[in-house]
Length: 148
Image (cartoon, rainbow, N blue to C red):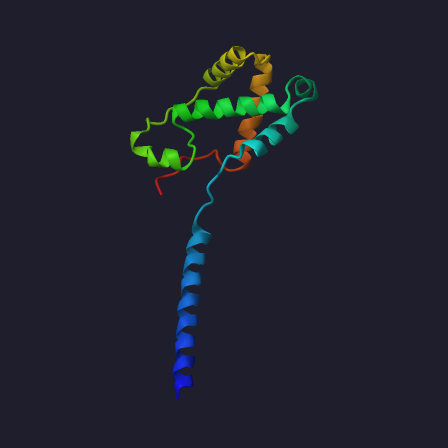
């Protein structure tokens, strides 16, 4: 007689587990993936895409530095976030504003000169353009996402 109760309990537990897994899987299938910027992957993508003459002048570490500075610029403009810290501070964040390409170019050239990194404007423009291609490839560019 006890085996009947054990069997019924096992069936109920399995049914509840199956329902829970199916429900969560269905909800996750409808959820859009969040684009996450990986600096090392972006650096590799950009450096691989550089034209030969620029790649000879601009090493991978300079590309990484430019991309990090660009992220910092975008964060200060309110259009990029660094994860949990920014999410927690969302109530204190500025309203996002558009970042003009010339503004980013000027800031990156200024920072490069201040750090003693020898770059010309063409190098920075090509890096920024390839970075935009990387952002598009990971799905970070597009329509503004509503609050989730």
